[in-house]
Length: 278
Ligand code: FE
Ligand code: FE
Ligand code: ZN
Image 1: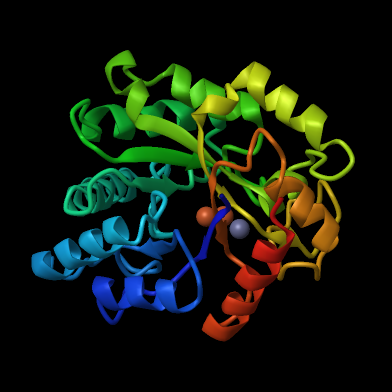
Image 2: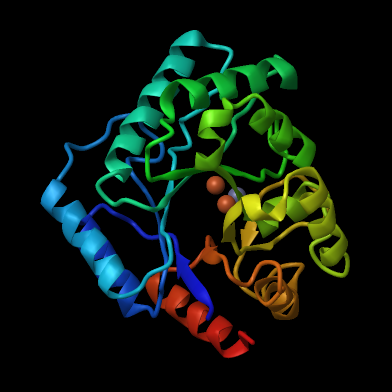
């Protein structure tokens, strides 16, 4: 059974966001737990979070994904920004426990010329100091396009970060694949999809993947541009997107559309992909 949803805004409340998801035929969704370009979080509205959690359960949603703010950079060269990132990460994970059993996705970060090894140490440091073995939320590292000094472009880099994690928290760590990013990073997500997934499995293990950002890309493979295209309007085309969505090793995942569409456009994309789900 295909599980698909889109990125939605929590600005009008969590329950309202869940209702928006239902109105477009979604059975999962993604949201920012705070202003994605700022640092301040709103005071928690616990009754709203509880009502949202109940809506997800009673409508049999797949796990939903909170996306960390873009301002979070665990491997910044600025110690103040690293500390701010750690605080936002801890606050967001505290919020997630009011909607237990879901996912929190973050960009591993930009190393800003410090090099990958230093960055990986900083990222693991944030994970090890904040994640608790008893938390219900699984934290996902997103596969990145490699734009600028982004870490997490290759499977090896993601593995090197996970290798630095305390074994006690490893069950709370996973990966969120992003089809646009993986292609932009240089991986073949079209004819070579099987081979790419085999490579991922060998380096990281496909069982680490807990969610999938299903996006077409405006740019050719290896471009490192990170420009998402709507379903069928990029280099994959509808066929390519459906091949990913229906792949036997991926089809059980919650798929999140991060395509440039409004609510009605997303409703159409969801309906289109449901038609093509095998
Ligand atoms: Fe992302
Ligand atoms: Fe993404
Ligand atoms: Zn992106």
